[in-house]
Image (cartoon, rainbow, N blue to C red; front, top):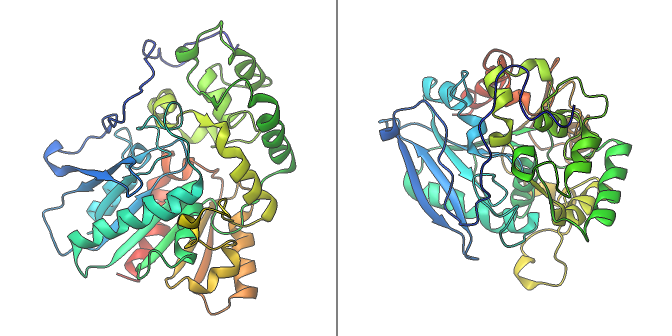
Length: 379
């Protein structure tokens, strides 16, 4: 099965080249191009990011910053093949802003760029994007909707006091208390130790690497007991980059979305694993850099600094989340015990996994309403 490079539903495009420049790959969407404002954006540590504003023609709307997960991109909020979150926000009177932080697959950093930790995202990418947005929107309310690692790093920014005054935050998948399955944690540790001398990232597109490559055994392992013949689906849905977890409920994706997985999710860098492993062992978001003075603004332990959260938080999670399990429910319970003054609520989406809460064909009906109810109550 691993040697099949075409999907049983439809054929996929030809082999693509690896990008080495910091030029962002174009967004895929169905909006009028005149409404898409791509804003040149470099962080103070010199990294080129992507910041995009959707022009609504109404300068009085509340703004919503959308943060993708690691190896995903702003594309996950703009799927042209279904009713996406940006569509819903526009229809309900919000101005969407999309940040491609340094873990975006629209950028080359996971494959060929300079290395980073989640400290860099929390210290530079998110706070500086928020400051830029505020210079444009003035005193209008600014919300954030964050997915996976985008949410985890946002929690570190929030507990550092670097993004004060948000009108509300929607966190999907994981926030302050990450929890992985035992086998996922074990595989993450083994992969970091056994593979770090041979490879520095795990690709998702078998067409890029080809059959005779050092990555073939990883794709072969991911194909074991897989029900889908597509190698990209196998390494994501059946294996989550080799960790043994699952990123989505397969049946929730349209054929078009399924065949775009290699564009929607990119290579996972192995050199980020030590930080992620430290976070997972602590069961909270912890700072990686202990001696570099540049990172002293970040708390050593975000959960211990949770009292600094100054905005309502909605914790979302699919009941079938095969990656972060019940991390969000755990977060609600821990914060209710340790910081009962915080405005934190938890909502579980029945039958949904992790990524399909945004990529699923029925997400507009099953998921986005919870987000809108939360935003509307606080706009």
